[in-house]
Length: 98
Image (tube, rainbow, N blue to C red; front, side):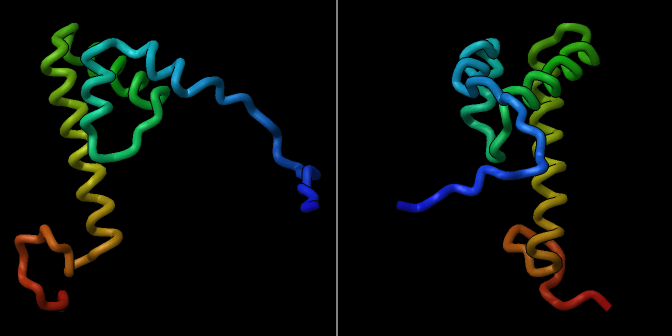
């Protein structure tokens, strides 16, 4: 029988039930999260949504647009980090930068 190493100096923290956290999100936000490209946690989406809805003064469509823009920026950042100038979506030349 395999033994598990339970000795660690890391503090344990309860993350709660992720499905319950997902179900507690507003319907519009759950739909956005289900269609998003990146893997977001319900807690981070709720935080981003709260900020976006505050900045948009309650306009849900503007808040969703802000979230989509944030996701796009994160995708572009990851694209540059992972693919560099060889990105399949890159509109620039396929030659190495000088």
